[in-house]
Amino acid sequence: MIAEFARRVMEWYERNKRVLPWRLGMGDEWVTALTAILLRKTRAEAVAKHYQRIVGALSTPQRALELGVEGIEELLRPLGLHRTRARQIYSLARAWGSGGRLPGLGPYALSLIDCLHRRRLVPVVDVNTARVVGRFFGVGGERVAELLGEAVREAGTCELNLALMDLAARVCRARRPRCGECPLGDLCSYAAASRRPSS
Image (cartoon, rainbow, N blue to C red; front, top):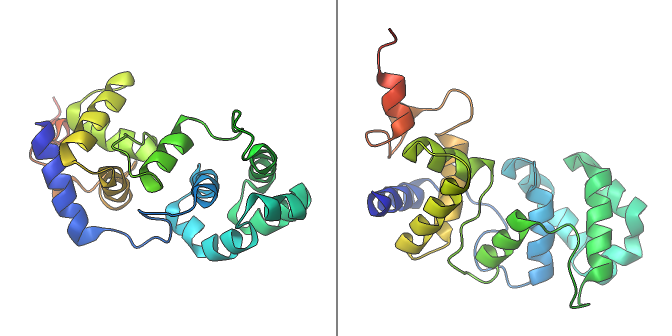
């Protein structure tokens, strides 16, 4: 089932992938970390709209330090969550290159860096990838991350994470999912349950 899940998702992705400026093969780890902070709790399309301007102004930790928290806040204001993000980015810039713990980078951000920058076969668990995997397999909690990890390894590319994010955005939406358009629909636990007549 994992192999079929991975195959179908990647086939769908080849035809339907979103074009976003931070996708695979990012050459700079700082920019990848910055991107992870920008994407937290924010739709990809909203980040894409402001991405080049923000990354241009914060292209290095030194530039972030020069701007200061208030300058970063002003830069991020159109994106929302600007106060929280500005403090995270400034703290990250101060700690960058120290070899110690990097503030503001939790499991999601670190796995996104591993995927986008290092191209490692790791699961990137966020509300979107968890929703698709959880619905398809009818599971929750830690089992979601385990199955996602298996699927990434089966696909042989961490790009499966991006494929699931796109599938979640376009088809397996939080509200009113488009099960009839889903490449996984005939095998999905959630879709099968929604097809059953209510008693």
